[in-house]
Length: 247
Image (cartoon, rainbow, N blue to C red; front, side, top):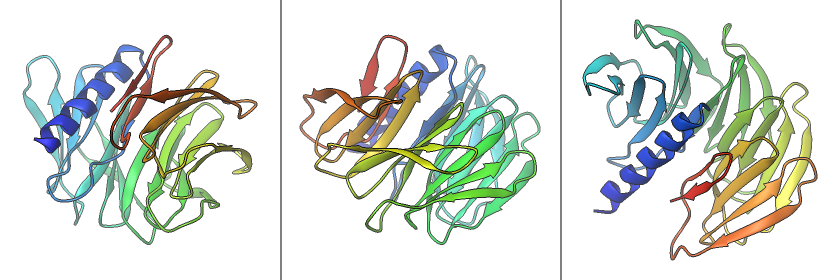
């Protein structure tokens, strides 16, 4: 039952992101039976224990199976002609959405890649090695490694424009400049690990093991609101122009 609920949260999150026309990234529901979901335009992408699949959103027809990882696909993201997958095999892969062809393998992490995000020019990956990495989407070249979260656990990532946001085991989220890799702000206020992050416009949203989500100003790093009401970890967050969704 818990897995079904988490899948429904993931789908709700993905649908919201698709509605506002933003690339979606879902931190994979790790462990046996975990499923990650992304939606953009006419496509749905799912990742599971064996592979990732591309589906037609209107007909529900399976269009492509993306086979190539040697471990569970923990996270997926989609934008334009590209799909990105992150896996327990410590790599991420970039795929062509129409042909299903593998374009690039992003190697460099030393542990599971549990979170991926995509923009027009870059891919960002978050890993259980406690780092995030920025990659060039066309060449697959690693551009920057973002280190600075304490602890040894998974990193959640989001990307928009000039900003990358990461969340980590040290109960903080961090805002980075995507070009320089410089840390701009540390968002401190949670009392548990930051499990999920989202970004839109001037706002960052974080979800935590402390059972709350928080809204922050991206430029000042100031905490604007604390969203309380959950009785367990906040695994997923999404943001639109008017609303925040937490799961």
